Length: 503
Image (cartoon, rainbow, N blue to C red; front, side, top):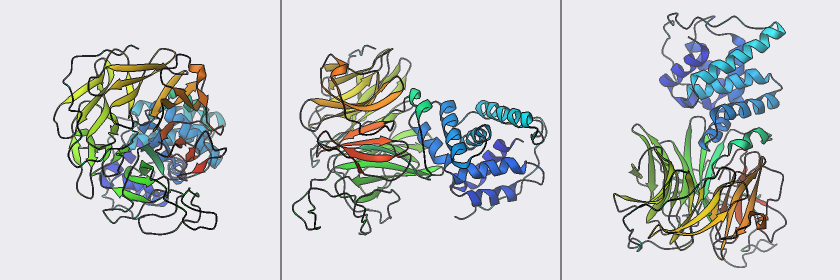
């Protein structure tokens, strides 16, 4: 049995958390493997990859729709740069870890391993070949887990435009940034880190953890759910230079899925204060969005029956919605009464909206081209989403009640993660042109993509953007974390400190 197959069997027995700690993984492999079953050098490469964050980085890319081969290549290059090791070996280790977690195919692992061994053979240091695939694998002892185009308008039922009773209204932005494949060759990831985040923002969230759990996210704001103080918190309009309160800063919330090893959890962070809370998800969760008041959070959750959209309204178990094949990009409405999302169909990817109190959904965008990344208008009456094109995408605004297209704005190259301004008639999005990814703001309906304002304030490759209720934009870059920026401000402010954080 090849080492990547052995590793997968080990994870089946003890769980994916064995990949949270490099020393724990080494100990588990020592207990699980028979003497001589695997080359020590190969075990060292696997352990080194885990120690330097290969798992969360790989999963972060895959969760953002990266091509598996490109994700393995990029993560392997990063690990090789960090450790000064052979890139082919690092790439094989990343592929093997991904295979063990069920996220990478065996063919990719095999080809990576062949490249690794070819490189060693050239240097005259190749280890003994693995046992033949047909050989009967030895019996392993039980291991105790260590500790540490054109959008059509199909016939559809009308949605009740009235919010559910008791639900407040407000501004919310959903829609997760989809990782463009063209970016991966240009990512200049630096530094370490063991947490990979996915983030999609809205306005409004409670400031305490209803479950009593301590925050695992790394916001740079002032307080967490335990009431601790962070001296690195950015100054807001509510704080004077001497630290006294000079007013009340309205909350601007974002939802974050932090990942460690093979599992993740969802949190909500107040971008104005740094306060955070943990959201119960009942499973491995990703792609979260939060309503304007912070009381309702939507996310993708993995279950034994497949992916579902989870809806959490407090400390209790979330509601699970079976909405179709391969759901993604859930965006909760500002009042928390509806969720927009993307599903895979025979014709591509379609955008639909479903009221949480209903059992049927309305298709907003469906056709021969892919539509994805829906985000709500501040009043909840319309959605913006990306309509794919051969060379240029479009940003389409559609009325939710009727499904009618209201405007179509050509994007600069390929687009993702659109966000409507809380006031005015503008949309922000990540534009990818010739491999460069920048945050662009353009007036809705502007026929000239070149009229957009590039407001990125660094050379980082941006992957997603969320428009906050206070007028700032939260943006994500894989080697920087999340920052807030605005047209008026010459500098950005850190929101999260994790390398690999994503909106």
